[in-house]
Image 1 (tube, rainbow, N blue to C red):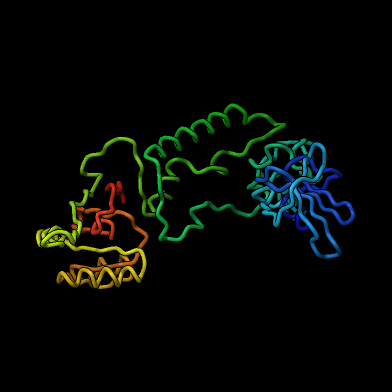
Image 2: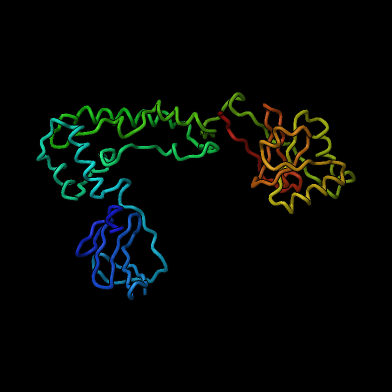
Length: 318
């Protein structure tokens, strides 16, 4: 019953995804996303073994430890959902006959091909991915995302206009299924965004620079001359980054010996509000950079040790 509630179909023999079969103490199951189906052998209520099997020959193959099960569909296909579909279908397409094949198949519990394009009829309301993302989410976007979204929605609208008069296969309006390019852009703007581009941008987009050589070299007469010179000339705030709390303490002691005193901060926001010009934080960052506005230098242990092989900058658009 649980498998059927997430869209799996009970059959006599499993051949394709979203099917399962029960034969005594053996359950055959073909989960969505799996390359092969699984054969689960039971001993009373305990699982005795799980093996993959060939759907063509039905012969068992390799033994495995667990099965990862995904729903067959992204919407319910229960009796209650089908009842909701029947009412919503009649309301949405009042001119379509009650003998419509799509309507009859779903009423009988049969999911025809392409039923995913009618999923709003199975539920009360729909949400988007963005409704589940926390406010602190950062989106990594391609610079062509808006053009791609516009082209996709235009093509979808054109197909709808061409086929909307087919009474045997009535279509839902694109607005009920997809976000338009403008709606998608409005969703993007609620979050911090990093935009990737293949083209070189001007200084108005790339608001950062490479760090100079800041290596502390014990072989020199003045080992910390580079970093001391930089800190003396830099007019903004500086954030040192360590990978772990232990390495942070080591970094504090190391710089303290050169009369560089750091203030420990717990987060980026805490650093921005900190009045002390030199701070240190624990964060998973490999390479530092210079931000132009506001003037901030981010320096990792790699820059100080000379391990930094290359520098790079984010393209920031907020």
